[in-house]
Length: 521
Image 1 (spheres, rainbow, N blue to C red):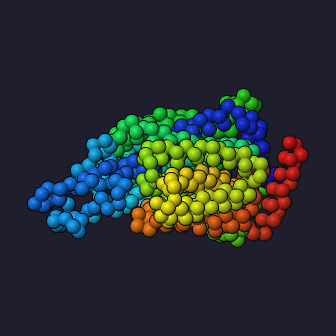
Image 2: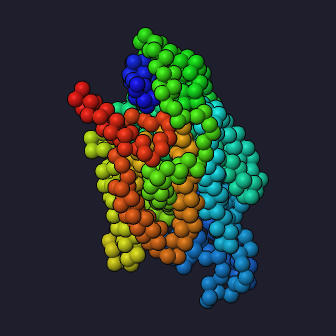
Image 3: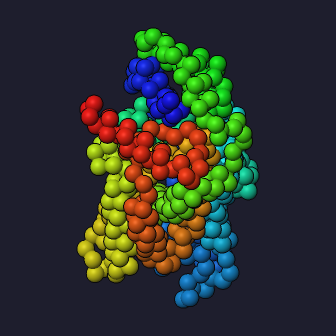
């Protein structure tokens, strides 16, 4: 009697493998990313500081120009040799762009607010990651996924009407929650329709960086944080139409012993791919053969319960934290790089496109583990090199600012590819009944790093290189941890947690299936 894992993999093949239905799934996964990407990265523009002037109350009215290349002109207090006293009596901002900084004068004694709002937003992603896995594994992938789009749409729309930075911070938390719910569900939801040979394609599609790069262009054209929120909310509406196209995951239905509903979904996939409906009675037989299975509720505790899952969870825990810190540290640190804000936003995102897409070939050719190891090492070296150059005296290094920017962009390329590989491996290391719980847990864990990143960026204003040294050191440790994880290339997705004594037998079955696939190839 075949295990449920192999039965469901065979059913995907019988439904046409990678056919018309799977192309539709990929198209939906591509289009809906625009809302998530813009929602998460909005603070790149909305939190940027325009040129500003400070007016002092003196006998002779003097204006000090802020935000220039001359360090001692960035003043919030009078210079020692001037007669002015006290704080600025008034701020004047450039009218070229409208951000929350000139909306609520978030400079000088309020310069901490923008980084704190970004941290609050990432807190929303963290909470969503913890809850969404349970929601998706309990109530289904489809409901949780499309609900996340509704949350982001409403959150962005209301945020555009914010009357204070405190109100805006609360709504950024709501938007972050929706984005976290989206990220914790999307990949799991999509790969459960995809044959194992093509699963890494979903993660490798450079949808997030494409829309992130597009955000730079739209920000340049609109230059108003309120209008950007309106546009983001409006673009979510077409994405909601996917609810009429993508069904519930048949893997989730089968793991919950909903055989009849799973059969309907399988028949729909087969019909859309132009194939005869497969024999779904095999699912019932496979479930009956699992004498240890129960239709019970699972929780995050289950990803620690068995020894083999505990090892995987501990190793991945650090990898996800370091990736979250590094990725968003580089993304939100764009304002500290030299050159145009819009060009740097574009380059930091566009460089991810070839990096992310290359992981599809790399993970299938060299395996998930080796790909993660090499990419994490490269991103670590990029971070350490950037930090080293940033600590040097700019006057002693020709093109100092350009070198720092190029090295930071290189590190961003490597970390985006590394994180994509880790996502692929993570989803393949946990069975269906806890796959969304585990993915949601790690998604939440990564937000711990993402929450810390804005604060380290703030400290880096006075401690050159701090951000990049932390990035390099944490990613170096992560590369070792990634190498200690088991290879998942060619393995069928597991559907139920197995007790410790069954792990060896499960591995033998997976190796046998891999050898069979290689022979057929």
